[in-house]
Image 1 (cartoon, rainbow, N blue to C red):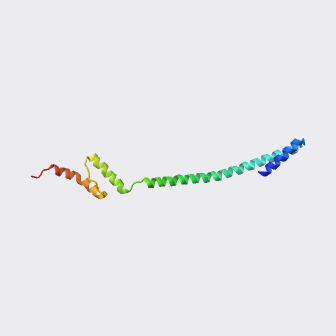
Image 2: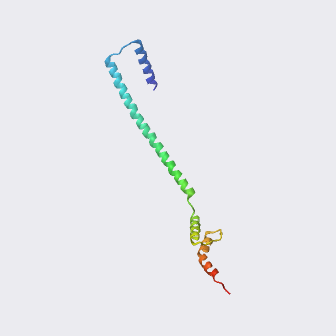
Image 3: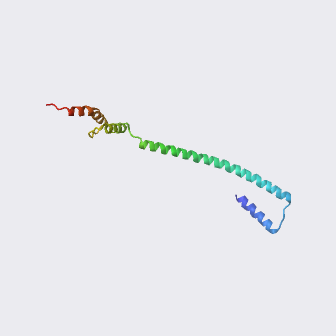
Amino acid sequence: MNEDIEFNAFLKSRLEEGTGMAPSSLAEIERAAVREAAARSAEHRVRVRRWGGAFLLAASLAAAAGFFVMQAATAPTPEETVADAIELLSVTDETELEETDSVAEMLLAWQDAPYENAVSDISIY
């Protein structure tokens, strides 16, 4: 980079002085500039690919980790799933269940609800 600044300053000073260059020298400078530009372009492409791949990999890993954390945070436990299913079934059966602390008691209450309803209709006198 610094070489380019120095070279450009040298060329500028020579052109301002009115010093001319031979056409063969100008052609050689042009060929060297084309080679240098091609080499820098190839180097830049490799650098961009290397860093681009690293950034893409980092973004993919971050997205996968975020998805995993979100899934782990929102996934219900098996007990919660069973409790939700029992509540849904009790609503569809139009049965009222008592509040219980355990899922097992909730399941037993839901299973016994039809029998309790049938027995409650029968009067024993």
